[in-house]
Image 1 (cartoon, rainbow, N blue to C red):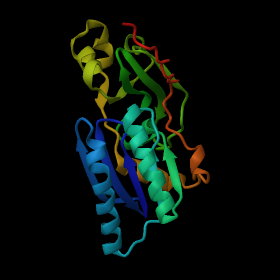
Image 2: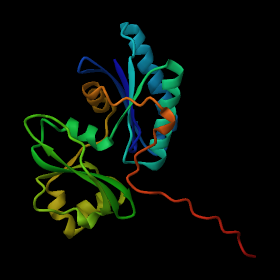
Image 3: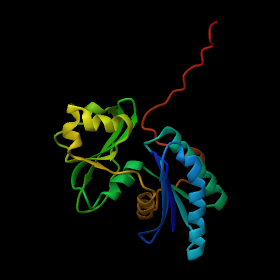
Image 4: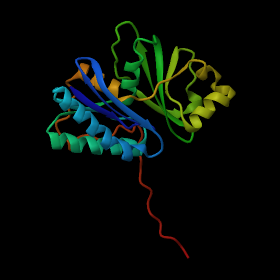
Length: 226
């Protein structure tokens, strides 16, 4: 039994998977929803596990890229749970889990896209096919008007805020929008993929950090002038 969470987007989701099947799944979406819903969902999942008499053997988390605050909330909570329950914690890249969820639906070169801020996006290219294997690709970070590529068969990901508006209204986005599949992050796919990989277990939790795919630098405080 693997208990997983995903807080990398506006969706907060928790799921458990056992022997390749999702047996518990809760999710909610909205602004700042992770602080409100993550702990209750985890408690429900653990209660469900006990009622089935199937103990949780490992934890998994969508490690990013994604929401700066969401990733930190999710990782801090899962680290605490791992220490409390003495369970291993497995990090799964958010886009790997998204691609895994589409492995039977899309074929060819598929570009995963996650909106960052302003007109910037994270993206990575997956080769999806009959094998169903998900190989972690190289990640990129650039403006959304660089996404269009004739060699890409499909686009998928989380289209929200300014990125969604760009897809729907900007003429330059037409070629991307026509091939775009909306695929939110999902703790169920995180749990299933972690179950298949199994070996990606972090032993030193202090070394586990969110995968931001971009370097954030704190701005130097400047005293106000009067």
